[in-house]
Amino acid sequence: MQIISTDVWKKETEVVPLPQVAGHGSWDKSQAILTNKEGCILKPIQPPPRGDREVEFYQNVTTSSDPEVAQFVQFIPQYFGTCNKKDGKFMMIENLTKGMAKPCIVDIKVGAKTYGPDATEDKKVKSDAAYSGTKKPFGFSVLGMSVYMGEGKEEFKVLNKEFGKQLTKDNIDEFLQMYFDGKHKTEKTTEVAQIFVRKLKEIQSFYSEQKKFHIFGSSLLFVYDAAALTEVSTDNMEKAVVLKMIDFAHIFPANGLPDENYLNGISNLINVIQKFL
Image 1 (spheres, rainbow, N blue to C red):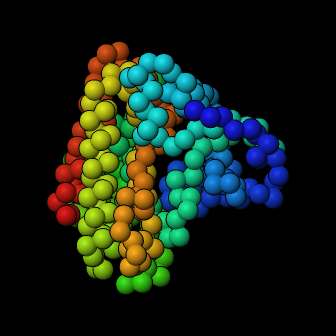
Image 2 (tube, helix red, strand yellow):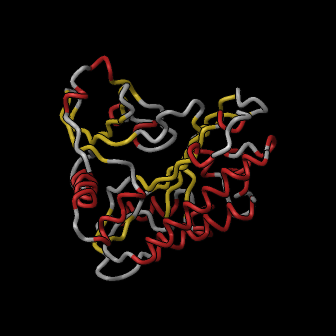
Image 3 (cartoon, one colour):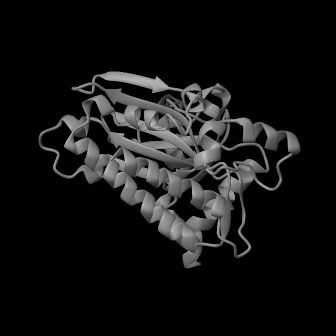
C-alpha cells in the first residue's frame, strides 16, 4: 500500500469540510471530516483509546503479511497514513465519492451490539436504546442518508439520524424506497441494488471466515452515482457503485471466534435489500 506524502495537505486553502450523513462530524464541526482537491479525505483521529485503535487497525491491515488480516484491504477505504494540522491529527483516507457527479450515500451501522467489551454500563444502556426499532430485529441501524431523487435526479434530499430512529420491522423498506428513489425505479436502479447485494455477500463471505477481529460500531458506507441512472450511455453500472466497511474505533481481538454480532447484521441487511428487489 502506497503511503503518500503529507505535503499534499500543507495548503490550507485546498482543504474543505466534507458533507457527512452521519458520524461525529455531522453534528460536531470540530470532528468534521475534511477533503482536498486530490480526492482524499482527512478524518479526525478520535481521543484514545478509540483513535489509537482505528489507526492501528488501518496500519495493521495495510502492512500485514498475514493473509487473513491483509484481506481486509479490499473492503475498506484506501489508507494513506496520518498527518498533523493546526486543528489536530488526522488519518488520510480515500474519498469514496471521488469522480461521482451525484453521489447517493447511506451509512448503515452493523450489529445489534454497537459497543465493545470496554464499554461502561451507562454506554451500554444508551447504545442499546438507540435505533432499537431496527437494531433489535435486524442487527443494523440506518444512521443517515443523502440522495438525488426525481426523474432527472435533480432533487437533493438529506435524511439524518431521526429518520433512522423511526424505522422498525414494519417500515424498514422505507429507507430503501428513499435511497433507491423507489418512485422512479428503473432497470438501472435494480442493477445498482443487485450490485450492492453481490458486494455485501462478498464481505459476508470473507468476514465469516476471518477470526482475527470482532468489530463493534462499524458502518457499511453505500455510495452510488445517481447521474449514471439517467445517462443513456452508461452500460457498466459497476463503476458507479461503491461499498466499503468504515469506522474501526471499536475493534477487538476475536480470539479465534467468529463475529456473530456483525454477521447477523449483514445477513439481515442482505435479506432486506433482496426483498426490495
